[in-house]
Length: 245
Image 1 (cartoon, rainbow, N blue to C red):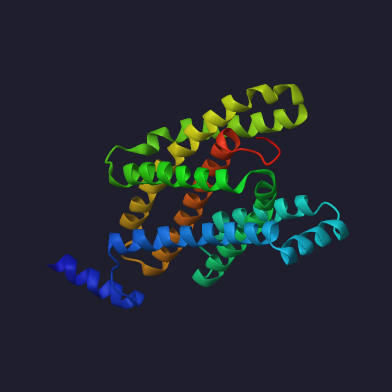
Image 2 (cartoon, rainbow, N blue to C red):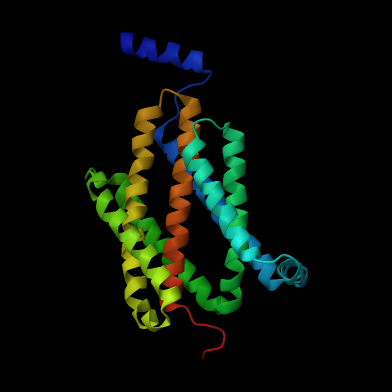
């Protein structure tokens, strides 16, 4: 009883009431979904509409190394959010997340131009099923997935190194299917891991609404990145390119 009284007083001081795990989880996944919607809407606009294609072509023609600038901007936003999220206001953190999703949409334009739209939709559906299954496993399981963190980091490091080597050594392209398969396994693992962290963050910050909001944004970013990377590896493995029948 004394503990309940203390929690109520603490919540009044923080200016809010305790949010339920269900509500917090739903808000996190809705934010992730908003990011995906922005990314694919931006990519579709700049690849499928006259004004979008013209604006993108004009930008690439007049701005040298625009693709590098976009990648650096994306990296800077992710580093800012992961390093300074605890210092940002909630509004600023959401704005950074939305901007990152939009920039990712610009870089995604090339995939809309390269791959058949129908096969991309099928791959997106498959990604949603795989992602949903692993997210549900991560959320409901009581197995401690943090023990797999080093294994996941090792897999991610391998993927980064493999991608760099494939860009520098064209002969390694024959191993792309193997690398994509490993990438799918790694990001399925990260999906379960990050889904479990949503619950863990709630248990840690449930009595601090401000930190809980920040944790929700951070978790949404992690899940968003898991979905995007899983989609890209499935796309490279299964989607049909436009110049192929």
